[in-house]
Length: 306
Length: 254
Image (cartoon, rainbow over all chains, first blue to last red):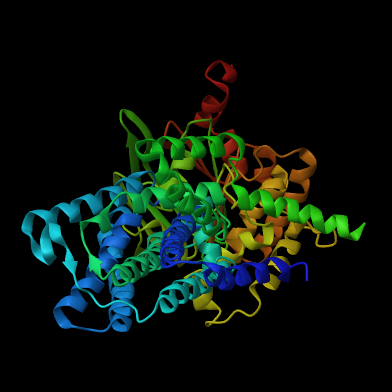
């Protein structure tokens, strides 16, 4: 019971919250929240379990979104197919793009992931392929808001439990070994580049799914898919929610995304308040909420025994 | 010493300089199967660099290394380890965020061990704990389950060795596994090394503790300023003129 309770609570919350949302606006907000959560989970996995600091949320979003969008607009494939193709194929493209910096140590990976979305965005802008600056409107959307919601929630739940399991499997231990000490892993006769490639594929598949999902949610794909928001906000969410917990990023985006909507009332000052909240979090709760809760919950166990 | 056995590792003319500093200069030696080779030398004489060159953690400028007659000095570091030449690190590099026994899952899951084990190895956790127990992690005190970050130095050195053993090595290269240990800890490590010798393992030991080293090794190579200045049996080497000079200085001879 002690172990099941938090998991049950998480699943229940994910199922119930959409039901109590009053308007279509709020439902959209929940969808957006989960998109950021997916990106944040992908960031958390890559950064804290594989040791690759990844600023590539926008890259994954853009590649996934544009693949799904162009397949839908040009070939008329249904959303089910485009999302699957965009997730698997987009992840392969992202992985190939990032391959040159995988054998390196240090910050190169972070820089390259940050630059690629700018590069790809400019290519689309300059060559006017794939709709140029207007993007591609008129994509097919989901049949009902409920499909919107539960598709992304279902995938998020699956990923949370799946990744949690993965990082404790043998291959996950290799990933964590690479994070801890890549030279030791090399000394064990394991090719770290091959394992990093696999990890990047997993993480970019998550991001590409988010992009493909979003383009069918809006019925539109455009240059804003490469916006840096998709790289930065997930990191903020992961920090607030708690790095290295996988579920923390979800909690973090559940705080950050609605918060940014509420702060809309402040207009131009929005980003200032946003930054202030982040600074406060980093200063006073640097471990993140989830790590804090986990610690408290562990104490709670002792308390029951007494 | 087993002179007639096949040469397992043949090192020929290894050379490496970092900028203007020559770390290893034309070092050659042979390592026979089942032999224990000691590499000694004063601080900064290029012992660890030599290990790094053989295991390809550092790329050599010149020279070749042959393993079982095949050239290996152009391969990637992980390939060398996969062939069975495994090393410990002088400064221990365990996976600090994992428990001790989970540290061994990475080698047990590596391509080499999976190939030897024929795919499945059974319960890797159990194998890991068995290896650790054999090497001195008391299971009754739950030492194998402790986080690597909470283990004292002696256990970390053993963990380095355990990681090598988990890989089912053909050549074990121990880079100063006695350094920083107390006399009592060394006293428990020496029988461990002797047992590996009895099992017929081929070992290269780099060490500053000459007395303990000479108990174990069959054959010694002495380095000074990157160059090999002497080679031979322990008792011969210690009487060697150049070696005395390197360790004691010129005045020490008088």
